[in-house]
Image (cartoon, rainbow, N blue to C red):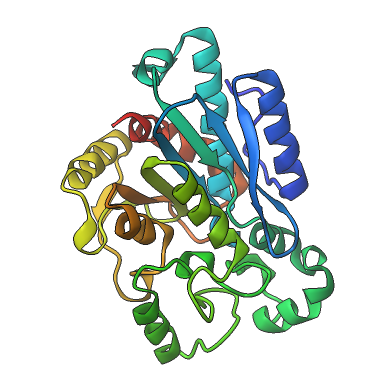
Length: 300
């Protein structure tokens, strides 16, 4: 039973308090702000262990997918408790599984977008009018950052090809979703992750999105041979299917960039089913289905 993280809506302030509470309860959790959003909100990472290489899981790239942040924080809490008690998470003893391994979590890559989707124009400050015009009042489905750039279209992997697809779809500038910016890595949220990965050696990376219950594991010619086997193990553990993104979903994403830049395994996992934003109360059910998969993703 989780004591701190609930199946509830967490805005930026509540999420930061929750991270603080987790770090206070489990002293081995170390937090660090790896960047600041367009709106000045901290982008926070939480680290477990000290190692030459780290596994990375990041969530909430898109505002309407903020449930992924809650699911990841549930995992952080249960993993921390298992480590503190020499207990199990799923079928794995946490201490033995993470022995000599390091882990980094980024619970919310896009805190501005998440608050816009949750709170509407109250989260936009002086840009409230511009954001309102872009989404025509439909804040609930907002995915981009405060400047109207889709963070998961802003990474430098197939970016130009993706930009061409966006233009063909009539996406010429800032939008609630799918506008990848005027150049790759133009956004502070994108840079927070790319600079983290260039500063710390990340052995494998997983990006959590919603929805679809699928796992994407390859991109271009730099996909490592072992990635497919890792993805198959993750699929078996979760019941999710392996898939390949097509069209405007192909390229520009964090997983795509990580594979291209480092020739190391990268994965996108689409959590849950339904229409975004998924109901907050479904977080616990989603988490129970994927927690062993998340654990395995850290140790393979």
